[in-house]
Image 1 (tube, rainbow, N blue to C red):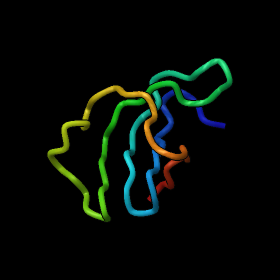
Image 2: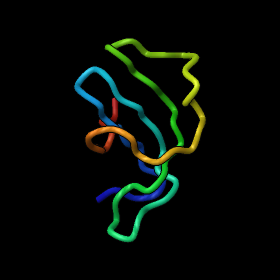
Image 3: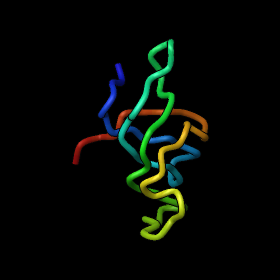
Length: 69
């Protein structure tokens, strides 16, 4: 179960995703908004992406909890 404060990945495909901290849940317990902390596009960690630090709604295919490294 995902909770506010969890780190998630909003995944477009395997090597393209946004990572961030959940800021709000929807009525069904899914992610409503999150603050983007990392953008990986085609396997490249994008350090200057315009989405970094923005609070957004999920925009890709699926949400997963980020694995702790």
